[in-house]
Length: 582
Image (tube, rainbow, N blue to C red; front, side):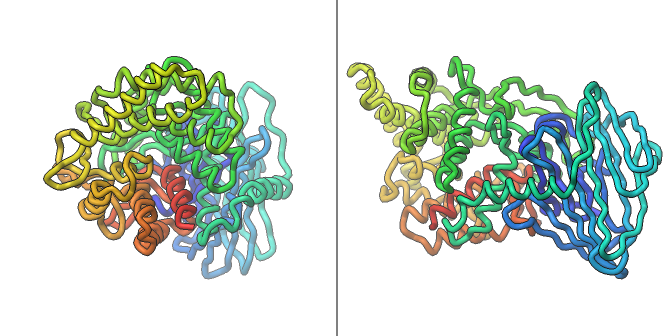
């Protein structure tokens, strides 16, 4: 049976994350960190590539699920003719001991259950060395050690660990999967009840500042919890998604690895945390970014590993068939080496927002970074690049890239007010800012249609142009901006949603990019057209799956989520637009 992306829910401990399907199978897990190899990779293949199933033996159970309020604890209820069971899934946080806890509770009647644990390291290729005792099993592959502690008897079937057992009303069974290093002492058993209580307390206490700030508190808190689940606690880096290889177009080749931290998301991330009342998280993210971009701006990457490391190896995995046959399956992301001009403006915009919010600063360090970046913008802004959508074709003069170069210079001038910048240098940068602005208004504007365009000399429109009034390039009242917003909705809109670009001519038809719908809603808020803004936002809310999660895109034709999941950028946009509408 085909598993849809929206059939999955997320659990995580802020260092790694797992995706659990409605059928009770954990089909994706990278341990010990988001960007390490997967030991459960059935999401991109089948059960032979690694999964952990805990479900009723009888197929076709009626299943409902939810997150416990204000937590990342997943409750799944399976109802069969003979009874009902509750499965509680979570990953332990707040400790160095890494563990997935699955607690099974009989709620009615009696139910026959099955456990099937199939560990496959190296993205589904390498079976571990197994040792199985009645209530404990160990799996070793190189440096990795995984231990299953069980309250029912286990047995080995080929390279799998299985169990069949009976659950009666009132009975509770605990299953704990722990991670360790094969050359270190075996992790000690944990107290399941204490771990569940402590983990839930951590989530509840963390998300409380978000309460009562919006008419959509549950949606906003769920998105904030999801973002926090994707934020590495030691470094502060937030990965774009915990997955790789989930296609943007069904059956296509646009299957990217999103387990990294994009600089482009920086200002949106900071704004989401600040607007929701999370100043500490905003500062942690800002500090991560400063560490990551340290040094020569000419060597800045579009993305980094979650700890800020630069090296992102790229290769293909031929042994995985891909999600619904979407191939190739790629590890790493070659876009990390692309020239994308907008990232420099994004970084300076983030530093400006940080100062405006009075976030504690390391001024000498920040001033050095700011000066180096604006000097680099001055030297490269006239070059073509790959743009916000990481175009695979030849570089072009993308309008949004030039706008963000203008933003970078503009924010530096605002940041440097009162600092020791010479009058001559300030005049040079003011002239540069004016020249970039004039060039965009001349070459990025189509006089025949009366709106801005995707790239210089083209007649295409793209959703990134909706960002122009939001970054202050022109006021929302400017007629050119109004016509651009209307053109984007008319040309890119479908079913209340917005695509990022005009439809392809090659037959490929990607879905609506969910963040773009929020950009349109934000523009309508700025225009005072609140009813339209709210309608677009509530259309976005309607696309969340049953536990409140969003992917990168929505395929309008098949009415399903597409792309890596859950997508941080979609949840950032949800938070920012909800608070804007509030």
